[in-house]
Each structure stands twice: as C-alpha cells, then as structure tokens.
Image (cartoon, rainbow, N blue to C red; front, side, top):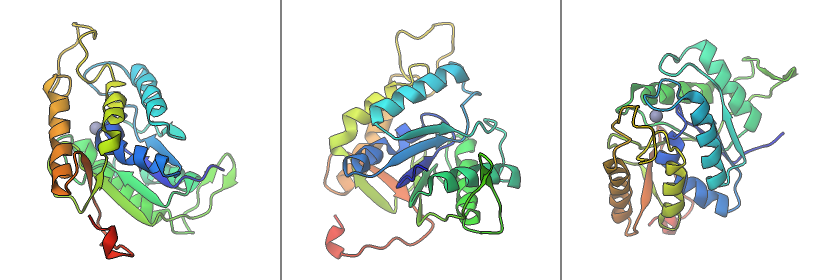
Length: 241
Ligand SMILES: [Zn+2]
C-alpha cells in the first residue's frame, strides 16, 4: 500500500493546481509523499472534454511531481454530501492513510466547491469509525482519520487561518495551471468554443494578485492561504512568520 503524507481531494481537475500547487511542491521538496484524487472529471466544464481533462491533469501531475493522481469519477455538478458519495471518499482516505487532507474552499463562486468541502469534511470524520466497513480489491480497509483537514482559498476571498510561503514554487505552479490548455488562456485553443471567466488572459493575473496579497501579509512575494475548522497549533512560537 502506498501511504501518503498529504492527500488533496479537490472536486475538479485544476482546483488543486489553482489552490495549493505551491504548497504541494514545497512539501514534496521537503520529502513528503503527496497525491491528488480529484472527485470528478470536470465533465460539465464549458470547454474541452473529460478525456482532454484526464490528459491535462496527468500532465499537471508530472509537472508537480506527485506520487498519485486518481479520480473518483463522481458526477460533476450532481454529487451530494450523502452516504453513497461519502463512502467513495472514505475508500480513498483509507487507501492512502494521509496525515493531512487538503480540499476545496468552504464556499466559492462555483457551488461544487462548497459542496465538495462539506463532503470531504464529513468523510474525513466518518473514515475513522470502525463500524463503517469499506473494502479495496476485496480486502477490508482499516479505519483512518487524518490529523488535519485544510481548505484552500480559490476564487472568492476568504480570510486565511494560515498562509504558506510559495515564492520559490510560483513559476512551477503557473506551469501546472497552464497544463490545462482547454481551460485557461490559450491562443491555440479552438475558436469554436466559448470563452469563459477562467479562459480570459486576465484570470492568471487574478490568481497572481491573490498570491501576492497573501505573500505580502507575511513579508514574502507569493503565498497560498488555507482555513481549518479546527484550531491550529504550533510547537514553537518561532515557527510563526
Ligand atoms: Zn473547480
């Protein structure tokens, strides 16, 4: 079994790249094992197709150097925070036994983000209950509850509980975002498909503005922000920036 230190459970391929790619790159550099399991294939996206997004997310995973990129194939737009979908997420959590889960923002411009956040938060708790039985390839899975569940901040501004300096990883984060050639600004993409909010050339500047703002708040160039429902502690006050 491949045990991960950090598992990202975002609803759409590209959410992890936008929300936390810099933090993932930093923790991979520190020697941690990191994986992403997208909840859906993003099949309702205005541009491109699910098959194209499969290829794009595999390419982004290569750029990030992550160990695992999986997909639960829940129905984009129509999954709910119910037992059927909770069990699928629990299976992924138990499979990789991560210490830290990162998922979508509590609420956002795209309503899937808030619903995914609630679904993953519920599954993280339920995954620790031994009377909920799941199996993988015919083998019963052990209960597992991650120590922390963090939510990245994507489109709408949310005041972060912590921010992570990603200055050294900004350029690679941008490369991982542009791996999604069907979604973001791409002069070579088919003119037959409509432009969207995220395909405009201005969009990456908005992403950069957010990272600069969080960076400035701790005296660095670029940072990513996260929230947590739990109070977060540190061992040493000098770890604070
Ligand atoms: Zn999304």
